[in-house]
Image (cartoon, rainbow over all chains, first blue to last red; front, side, top):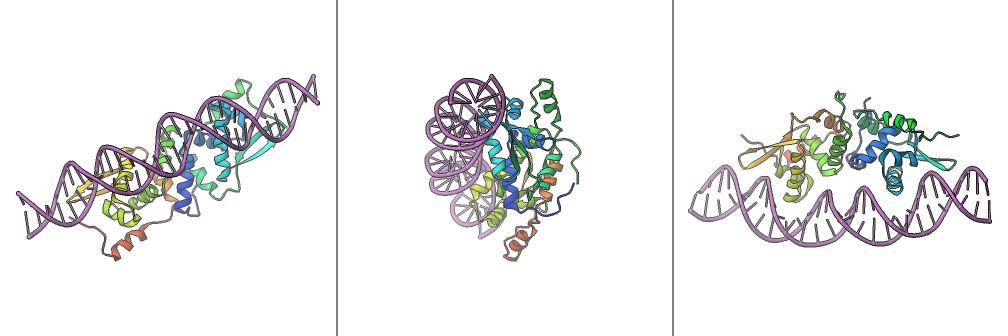
Length: 115
Length: 115
DNA sequence: TCATTATATAAGCACATGCTTATATACGCA
DNA sequence: TGCGTATATAAGCATGTGCTTATATAATGA
């Protein structure tokens, strides 16, 4: 994977700052595999629900992720239309796979799959 | 360029946070081309000398850059031994070339070349 | 309609960050 | 040795960040 379009420095700095948080970085790495809902992230990170919500909001405000309601759950996914999606994916690419976190959830019966 | 070794999430977050500042990100992109001394950065960024010094210190403390004195000037360079150098270079790779900043300095006769 | 569950948002707080000003240190040169 | 230039460092301050607690909103199901 090779980013084609150059990413302006200002934009890159903003993106990297967003990614420069362990929770958000991990969230994105997970979302690169599968969509997730808020309560799954709460389980995964052993964090409070507002804390998770606030991280997701930052990612959403910046355009990196999208949300879509499914019943009572709000699912988040990487925004495929995001202008710098390729860049973000490249940055994520070097990180270790986080799929095991979802597997763990599954084993605990805490994975939300609906509709 | 493709990062071979996976970068642990914690480390990646710390690195990306460091890069998530426009001044430091630009510094690194410049250093990817050529070594620079503090006073050149001061010119380039129209910033105060302590401010530049403090950014460079963060990069040095994290291991991304090295310093070496040449006469009265302190030159900074990318640390070739840095464990995650490939990762950093990959992140920088997508950014527009900043060589023109050095060219500008040169034209103003403000480029420091010594020894 | 009401209780439950999932989520978002607001307010407050502790701590981090990046700048400024002031000062110390180091080198080169007369 | 003393001055000018380059750099580092310390202290102070305004602002940003990420958490917490408290509360509001939304959907589900009895």
